[in-house]
Image 1 (cartoon, rainbow, N blue to C red):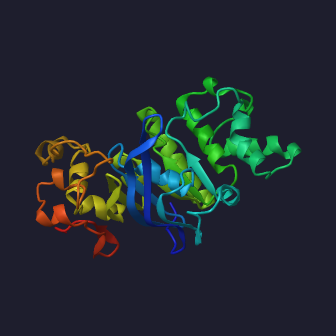
Image 2 (image 1 turned 30 degrees about the horizontal axis):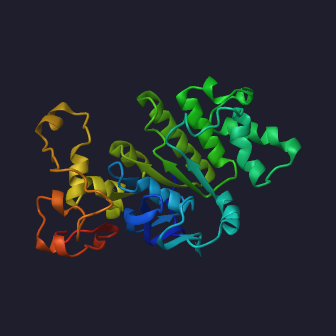
Image 3 (image 1 turned 180 degrees about the vertical axis):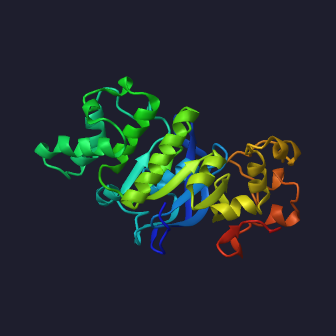
Length: 327
């Protein structure tokens, strides 16, 4: 994995994505789902930023806002220094050549009626990046890049295994030579034996092509392996962000500590003696989140300040930011 540079590829500033809830035939507004609530972070060139948290915390929504598959409610999304948060679709489409996406489900994200070659090369057609006579050669090159045999180009998705389908999805994401790839839980639907192969492939491609990754996942051990920095998300907000080794060695936010205590350790002696942190209650609804710190109803160290005010991300050491009054 290449060392990240100081060039910022993505800069999110106070990003919010609220989904309106309607009711009745007249579609009367009755509330909002606050999927992403005031999120700010940066992704530097050639680095991998891991984004972790429980299901429903807003990880995927954040990724889709960066890709502008969703129009954010408010906030700014800077991509290569340009604010793309309010651009109309006709101006966004050319920029998407520099963005790629690898989706969670290698079965549902591929068109079952198209051949593998057409699936991988479709971005080339959409963005008019190759001539018709060059198409097959370019797709064959993509297949070899991700470890697939070009002789499989005429097959359809159901003839591939799960790992091969995900490699096909990676080939499609890299077709236009993007600088940023959003990996939305790309290994969670795969067998454990295949997961390591896909992770190794992503690391090799990053080294070879100079890619930048936003790696969304809930497998904390895998995130530690692939990420340069890790951001922890809870109920639409970033609660902690730091270098991967620093976060795993020195977690500060109570939620981060609870998450890491659930990661299995391949050492039976350590596994038996370490303390597990079991959170009380359920994750609150994003329709009606708690006041102040969203985590305070489940936090053992919460005070009155946590109920009344919203904690902001602040530096506790070099590059280690935490949103907690007790930090």
